[in-house]
Structures are given as structure tokens and as C-alpha cells.
Length: 349
Length: 287
Image 1 (cartoon, one colour):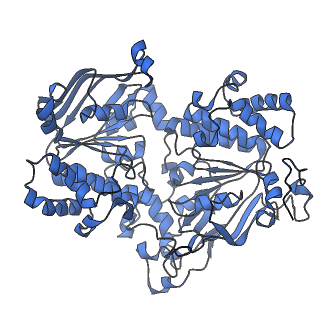
Image 2 (cartoon, each protein chain N blue to C red):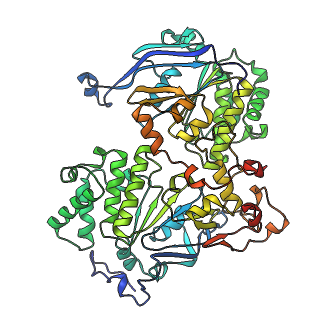
């Protein structure tokens, strides 16, 4: 298929028209995804996402938790087809209601972004154009997708700012990004993401740059909007404490792999992977003052030189000879999986 | 937990004020429009004590840190370090006094010069304050400092980019300790680090305190981290300290509405973990 040189070719039609579309399938299902930076100029191949799988249904919140370099953001970006230059998807699928986005061409992918899957990033200042009033930036979304004329789009934009609880929305629509506080700016970005009523909203560290009181407000807002729109919400975070209140299900990533996946209440109370358990113990907790924090020795592996077998082996206090073979995914409870040979010792059962 | 009871104040701050011209446009200075970053702060740090300073961005925490370390000079007010008025000192006397109160920065990525080796970075303060360590002993002293913060003396010949975030923060701490300061002002020293690494650095601060008898001003926005390291807490908002108290006062019986709001919004694992046998063998299982 040759790309059309015209600026606005007719839209290739909604995802719902595709034969693979299944309204009952999960809103987003990532299956055995592998993303690499291929070897180049003396650099070895880096596998940054290595067989990650998870899914989220409408009205649910999935938290994808991991430290820097765990591949959590890379996985999230694949769902929008916005991988950084040089990164390539090697295998796996990313399905939105049954349709594999990795098989779509760029033109159709463009209609998926915003309309089916939208994303909110950590830094709202970078996501907004500094020289255009925020109302016009939101209105543009409608115009580009051919959803409304100028006047109607401007009206919709004010509605959206109102829906993300920005006070005095009609006046604020005329303001520039720098005139908003960090929290208000993140609300503007969320409004923009919701413009085309997507089914899936991916929020990549949406509150990391914000103060705690503002962070609590933004998390509450995401939760409210999710209820109103029956959104499938993917919350990408480095912090198990931040997602503790809102996640229905948590996927813990380490070195490009999902090492444990469990319903929220289950993961915190009965972690079944030594990495999850170490992370939980390393978080300073209120009311545990005076105790030294548990630390994890070492640092995550270089994605170009992963350990054989279990990736966590070099840092794991439970590692034995068997850990040199890749651990299978064990079912350790209802919707609870762990990729650890010795998960039974971790849960203490 | 500390070697000596917290009695003698090592740092005493009275009615400290810092005003900046609003914006850095030339006319702003002339217009007389000013921002008050620090607005009448009183605080006391006793020997061997850790004072946690919490507040949100723009509350004046970092401005206060810069005043305490004499990076910036106050508009008015008094700063007394080890019995001497820091705010009145100039020139050589000020330079000598700075030895006693050192700053640890938030971002271990931008606060280390990428072209310098670890040896040069940690040794730099010794070249400025020549009276502290004789030149011939520099190599041994740097090795000692690296070991103190949990690095290997072999790391001295490497450059910052070869280290992870947590290791870089250790380098920054080694540099801050080079002059044997009595007081360390740590401005968000762990907020750029991953959770598992953050715990290593928090524990390092605690260990250094009992080993070296250092007193800390520990600035952070994460209330759970501060609860872990501090003896007393000062809550800052809009340039003022709105509440001061022991850790138990602030966390268990917060008085000021703002402190209450901060505590209510701070993310906490505790509710999610309820029902989990907490330190069954606790963190000991990791050892």
C-alpha cells in the first residue's frame, strides 16, 4: 500500500469495522511482546521488553509497576505505536478488542490513537504546545479527526476542561500552558486524551512530577473519569504505594519481563515473587519508623547482557542452581501468576 | 539511636528572610516587584539530630537550603552555625565556615561533572580547603571516603556515566563528607532514585549519622521517607514553617490543617498491606 501524499486522506474507517473486532474481547491485551534495539555499531542487541503479557478490560485499572529500565514505558508505547527510533517489535501482539495493532498500517494506526487508545505522559509541559491556548489545542483534536467544525470544536474543548474539573473552564480555555500549575496542566492533558472518548487510557507516570496533594487529586480524577466512561485504565508507575489504592490488578515488570501478576489486594498481601516482595519491603512505610529499610543489593541488569535463566537471579537471596533455567509462569492463586521457581518459599506456604 | 543526646544546637536560624526580584527580566528588578521565597523562618538543629523539612514545590525548602549553606545570602535574619554568625561572615572567614555545612543535591545525574573522574570529584573540596588534608594524603583520604559510602576505592579512576543513579548519589555524598562537615543539608537526596536503591541511600544516611555524629537537615516531599530518617519535622508552606514537632507529634497528632492535608494525600502502602503478616521473618528473610 502506498501512502497518499494528500494532507487529509479519507479516514480508513473505525476499528469496529474490522473482522477481528470483538466488543467482548479485552479492551487491551498484550501477549508475549518482545521489543528490541537491534545490534548496531559495536552495540549488542538490547531486549527491552522480553515476552511481556497482560490484559485489561473496560472499567478496570491495571497497574504496570517496575523500576527504571524494566520495560514498562516501552510496553506502554508499543500500544500506541510510538516506539523510539531504532526500537523494533520482534514478536507478540497488542490487541484492542481483538484487533492486533501491530498488523495495522500507519494510516489506520493513526485513527486508533486518540479514538481507541490514548496516552497521558509524565511531563504535561512537554505534551503541550507553549504558544497555543489550551482550548485551541484540544479543539484541534476534534478538527483533525473530522469530528467537528471550528465552533463546535471550541465548545467541546470547554466541556472537556469542565469535565476534568478545571474551574472557570470557558475563561481558562483561552490561557496558555505556562499559565497553569503542574496539576492543572496534567488535567488539560487528560482532557485532551479523553477528547475522542477512547476505550483505553494509558497513563505513564502521570503524577510523578506532581506534589503529593496534587498527585492525590489527579489519581482521584482518573478514577472518577474511569467510572464515568468505563475506561480501561493502564497506570504505569515506579511506585507500588501510589497505585495501591487504585489498581484492580498489578503486573510487576523486571528486566523486560512481567515477573508477577495478581489482583491488587492479593499482590500486596501475598507477593509470590522475591522481586515484588523486596520492592514492598524497600518502600518506607508510615508507622515503621526506626526500622532500617530492606535493601536490594546491586542494580537491574544491562538489557544487552541479561543473566541466563531467571533475570532476577544475580540479586535474589533465594537463587539456587535451578534458577539458571528460565522459570515457567506458575499459577499461584486466582488470576495470580509468578515467574519464580521458588515462589512457594516467597509466599511462605 | 545517636551517640550523644541532642542538646547543643549546631545550627540556629532566627527570622530568616529571602526575597528575589520577580522574574529575571531587567525591568522586574527595577519595578520593585519581589517574591518572598523564605519568609521569617526560625529553626534549631541540635547535635546529632536529623531535622526533616517537608513541603511542596515552591514552599521555599530549596531556597532555605541554599541560605543555610551560604550559596545564597539572606535578605535579613540570623544564621548561627556552631556558635558563629554565618550571615555576617565574608571572604576567607565565610569560606572556612562553609566547611562545616555541606549540601547534597537531588539529582545525581546533573550534579557531577561528567568530564571529571570520581577521584577528582571527591578530591575537589580538599583542593579548595587545603588546610583540611595534606596533599600527600589525598589519595588515601579519597579511598577512605569511597569506602565510607559503600563504594570501592577502585572506582576512583572511573567517570560518573559508568555508575548507576544510586552509586552516583554515593559519590555526591562522599564529596560532601570530604571536609568532615558537622552538618549535611540534603535537598531531596533520594527522590530521583528507584525504590530499591532509595532504601540503600536512606540506610547509608542513618549509618553515617551514628558513625560520624553528623547532624542533618533532610529535605523531602515524600513523608514516608522523612518519617524514617528524622527525629523532628518542620513543615514548610509558602516560605514559612507552619508546624514543627517530633516525628510522633507530626505524624500521629498533626495540628496544622496543612500538615493534615499533606499526610492524608501522601501515598501509603500500609492499608494495602493490612492483613499481611508484616515482618514475619520481616526484611530479615532477605539477608
